[in-house]
Amino acid sequence: MSAHRPPAWQTLLAFATIYLVWGSTFLAIRIGVHEVPPFLLAGIRFLLAGGAMVAWMLARGAAAPTLLQWRSAFLLATLIFLSNYGLVFWAETRIPSGVTAVMQATIPAFMALAEIVVLGTQRLSWRLAAGLGVGLAGVAVLATNTLGLGGSAVDPVAAGALLIASSSWALGSALTRKMPLPASRAMSSGAQMLAGGVWLSLAAVALGETRGFDPRAVSSGAWLALLYLVVAGSIVAFTAYTWLLQHESPTRVGTYAYVNPVVAVLLGYFLANEPLGARTVAGTVCVLTSVLVITTMRRTSGR
Image (tube, rainbow, N blue to C red; front, side):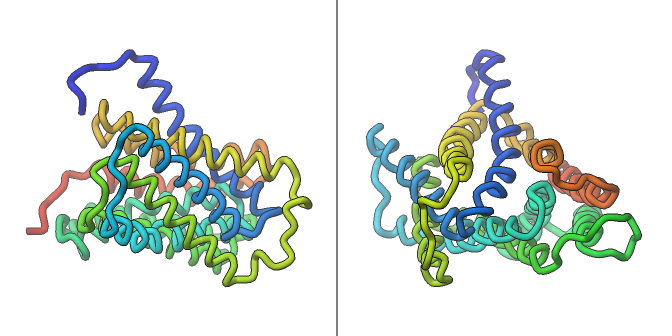
């Protein structure tokens, strides 16, 4: 964290950016996948965003990734982009954007598990177990009809896919600490985005999404959603995020994990007529309670 404190308005603007922009990307995805196949849309997003970020860093004089670093980027991209983002985009063809955001908020729980199993940097405590249990209970509330909360449960296949997506992100994030990557965080993320765009585009071709797809039939609204995902969601918000990490504590920066699902649920309700009944509220409260419990507990070394 930097000793020099930037003006308060810059800090507030950066927080507003990661809170609102990242929270709104779920609705933009939902708009886009109505007209563009999900893996193809995700592939275009990260090819453009990753390519722009790598080119920008090279223009600023950053060192190009080495062959070994590119290999790491492509390996990590299979988890963080192909599995996580690919499944998120696909799930939003079947379930509301707000619910998708809430289920992606289970990532801190899976990251805690990854720290226990993969890194050995955390022990399983009663508080961590309780946090994990509450988070999974929230997912169950959203995906089952057993509690009589009214409204329809979300598609269980999509819910399962989102749990796989969250666990893939967590595993990929844990492995980034063990793999050789560019020293520049922006170059590292740009390389991973670009690699992810390649994997997602190959998946789109393998799944037949490009057959019969006519870009001319896509509305301007869907293309604007894609542009928003590339520029605001990937480049602007990520720049704000990395800037905040240099000036604020990781705990304060990490508060976006509480805010993004709430923003996504409210935007989905007000702008896309997505349901906001007792089921969605109860599931959201459970998952956000899980995030709060896990992200605020004291770290205990596993070694």
